[in-house]
Image (cartoon, rainbow, N blue to C red; front, side, top):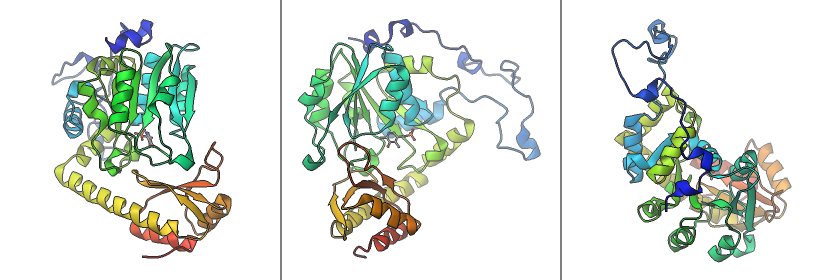
Length: 357
Ligand SMILES: *Cc1c(COP(=O)(O)O)cnc(C)c1O
């Protein structure tokens, strides 16, 4: 069954805004888009070509990212970070005031915000910190009903660092077939050392995967993310998206990040961060005032302190900012610590009075 049957009915045949560039023509003299004919780069003011609108979905970048992620270009949509794809999927599938979204907690806060903006109910299965945030897929599925349009699994999960992959995802995809989209957010999968859930796309038309250049590829400021999904879902998202989602400068930055030499450097930096994550996890586990360091597959650690407020203040006093999660249900006294450069991590350990290298 096509997932379009589960989309908002009024959007299935939705006609997108007919922008000039969407028509796909090219010519030497372009008088079609009310752009300025002068490139302000000629006076040294800006980068070249900014007087022209960008391609709605830049072909070359799309092809390279599709190759990197192992999918066909028709299964990939590029947007302003994965945040935009989350928003558009919620808008495409959820009827306001009727439909709902299922996820577990704790997880990435944007899902709840996006669901609220679209008027969709947000149902969560509370995972237990004491249980290592283990996921019982039957319990998650028990929250889904006829009006559930998205089931979201963040893996590795922000903020717990927990990995949910393999059989669990396959089981969810099968159980939700024809009913709901299984959205797997892989913002941190590069740090996990496991295969992407995108392999499920070939067998399940109801699976969608989010990838981003913001974390492992060091381009948070460029705002480039990708949705990997069935071509019908990609086409629907493209039709409801803003006419020109990606600024030219971001396209150039993303393209540069995908050059072989840069990719090789990225892989080396991922290896450094993973080694640092394990070093810091071991050191923190024996540091004074630390209760629990959960295993993490991301570029961060979730840490429970005896007194998180005191630890947060101590770190801030040393010029180090971490994220306080202690107000979230089940995460009392928990801080999320991003893994930095080795010298930054040493400063963190020193501030906490923990073991050094
Ligand atoms: C950081 C993060 C994102 C946001 O990615 P962008 O591509 O920068 O929008 C998405 N999902 C999770 C779980 C994240 O932590």
